[in-house]
Image 1 (cartoon, rainbow, N blue to C red):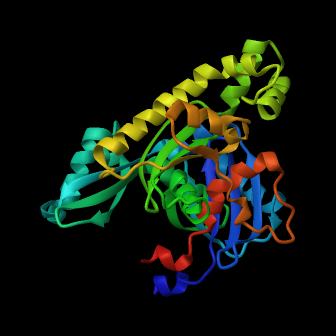
Image 2 (image 1 turned 45 degrees about the vertical axis):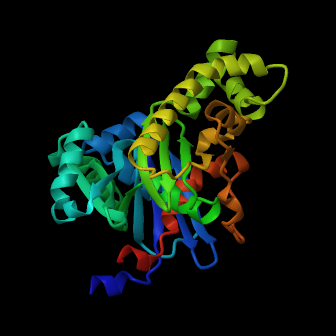
Length: 351
């Protein structure tokens, strides 16, 4: 009964990150945004809410729905995105004969590669490819406490969660629809406080990695190195960035250590994909998303560092805001994850 009840009811996306909550409703037949909004949060308080009993998240989701929405939400059914950095996604190959004992094989993979006891995780897995010899298994795991706290915060705001997924899966869905994401693609999602890295292949996220460096780190780096205020540093970051100009060398020198660490982590994710998954499929492109993607010249930086075509993703040509005011250009990238969550078609949840 539940499936029939849910099948065609519209859904809304809610993206919870360490620095804020975003909400969006999209009519996927027309890619029309019906409503959206966001609220900024304090990372320390978000951490307390994710790991403890604070009502900070629920209170802010209520405030967002009441005071900060543009347009309207089509239902109370939510696809919830939880922070990718708190999740683990891996893909691995198994012989076809292992399918009968797939649960055991997944448990071995969890024990080997995830530094958290399996009993404290929600673990989900599916076969995403098969040939005569092998099956390709995609596994996702995330802390039970974090999922439970995110779900209860959303429910505390009077909404009903029907699907939970790591934010990167939602980014992958949107990029598959808008940016040739069916090609084997590296995604680098630079948020305010952290960067998530993943490989997207044939519509599925195959592996994820990440590190605690983000757009705010870039601003601090520039402020320190150039001896300017945070406000000036932010202006230099978004207006000059890595583009040629009188200050390019100084800004590049300031950002280089952080960018180099992102490159090192990206190489690790690429190596894992190439060694364990790729089956000779070549990675074709790198897409930069997230708030940190508003650093001019960042696409060229990745192209040169990794010798791979790289660019900042721009799925906005697909999303039509209709009569609603669009987010300001520098804030649009914040909404990529929630747009991906909101673009789940209700029927697909029950496949």
